[in-house]
Image (cartoon, rainbow, N blue to C red; front, side):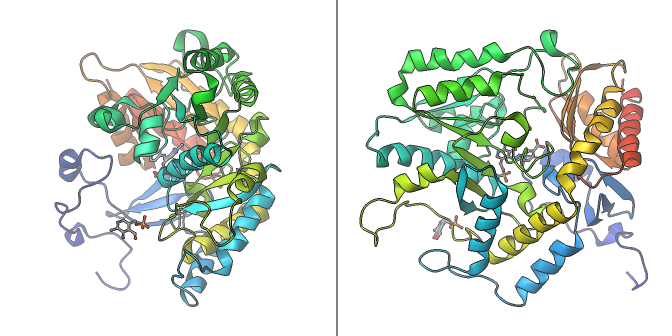
Length: 448
Ligand code: PXG
Ligand code: PLP
């Protein structure tokens, strides 16, 4: 390729695709129909054939400030010139402390401590371990049960997978799921809440299932309830009005920790840093990842209240309090990216921007109601799902075709089952929202 050629105009430069075992991908199908991204800037990808593709999913729900934000790029480059890696156990580097402090200062008041991981999956397993060890530290070690929810996604580690409620992610590993896990029902009900905008008004009573599980297992055996305040991967399932409040009430009454998995909902996706500022319900632990660096460097973690942290800070001071951590916990590049991303979110007021765009976005996606095969549309913040009727005998093929059509027409969406999901960067414009929805509409119309 010559110096002046635009990026990505040569398929001949495509590497052999065989060696890579791709994550959550139909490998054989993909390798026959590859879609390779070679560059990105702002709200656009560049495909290998040089096309601009509007990123309607912020990467995988992570590039909330858009791709390659110059301030985050600059911070990461500067970090590389100073410190690449610093041991994470028994010695550390200043930026990890700085990021933890910034994050706790910005988070809802209750959260005073941050533990860093490299991904959302690790964040979820870490939060579950904190919950179990917290009760043990307080002499309440009979609390070993964990409660998740149907359709929940908490990553792919053994803990998160067990508490999660995605059948496809669990069934092959059923024999190895951790014991003592039970699940609440999910809250989606198409007869009762199709086309609801924001929080559905039906469904708060489903929180009473937690009372049933408490009666069944006895509260003294239950360590924690872990749920996404708004289910993301499950298909943008927004909590019914009153539901989270009742879950909180039951957890508090029975000494059960409440963990909100905010890997998708954090960092502006629902118009605030974290969901308590949106839904008014505060958990005991929050998991985060993705948006904390706007997707630039992998980073995740758990936010804990002072009460939880303090329960660990017992015993001789020279003893390790929590036997858990990762080689790359608080990696310097990730922390530099995280600090810069928080500054960008604040200086550009991106969470407020998301709130301002929300009604426009809502109006735009709900205009797809009435298109053929569309059976439900849901939205909250800058996240939305358009659910299609599955084809008889061929589930998920309809949504897959819509996804391909959109990609070919310059918009990257996501599909899971027969649901199309979108969650554009918070920097998206009104016109671009219109383009995303028009492209989806055309794709639905072109799909039998
Ligand atoms: N918890 C939640 C709520 C998530 O959404 C994870 C944990 C795991 O994070 P990591 O970083 O280990 O992937 C997630 C991740 C999708 C999609 O399009 C969602 C996720 C990942 C990939 C795709 O629904 N969520
Ligand atoms: N496996 C082996 C053999 C290791 O030595 C380590 C870390 O030292 C791990 C797994 C865990 O890796 P990480 O700390 O990056 O999660």
